[in-house]
Image 1 (cartoon, rainbow, N blue to C red):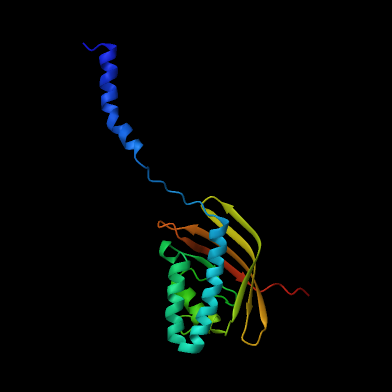
Image 2: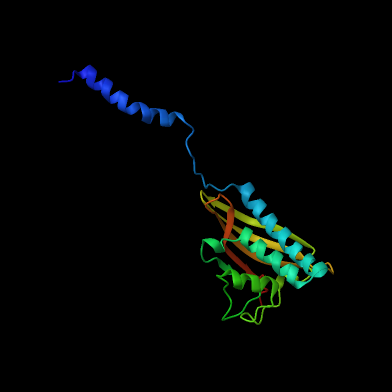
Length: 188
């Protein structure tokens, strides 16, 4: 029969490997989103819009389409599932673009499945600015609402109401999973 002291020693001996495992650096998963990450993602979106437009003008529509596809893959969460994307200038029955193909058609047009899309990102945009009204971050989800001001080649500024929601993917990269855009209501 084991004495209490011997029993305690035996238990400690069996726990020693567990204690050693805790002494190593643990793997930490933290998907909390920071305001800096959200603002950087918005800035990257604006820069991409201007870049797609510029690429269309200097290298043609196919080069712009390739760039837009890379932008969608890097910024949006289509690889995670449906993205809740309601572009500014869409009409029923194709108002909502929950697939990558629908988003790509909106940005660069040329897809017979979306015959009304002419390519919003191909409109000669030269500047894009984000003006957030609010940024709401709740741990793993960030939601923004405000305006995007985009400038055309003639200097005309178009203001669009925009809401985005971001989450991090398994690699820790921020992804757009909701993108709602509309023109401001003009009233009566």
